[in-house]
Image (spheres, one colour):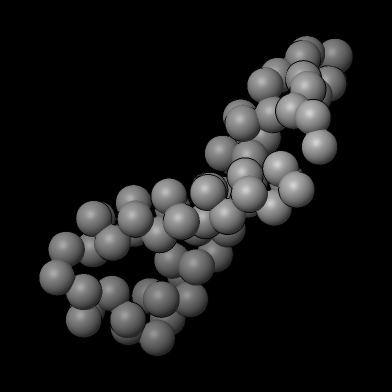
Length: 67
């Protein structure tokens, strides 16, 4: 797939910005699930864990879209 600009309400944006927003929405839902089950209490540094999870989700989206 070729990464081309995406028309969002008449404004052309880079495709990575849409992927960043999608990854953030996925991360918010994952964070809610983790808080519900108390998984973040077992992590050494929760903020570092969340940014690592965000990078994993974002890179997975980029790889999936790129194929």
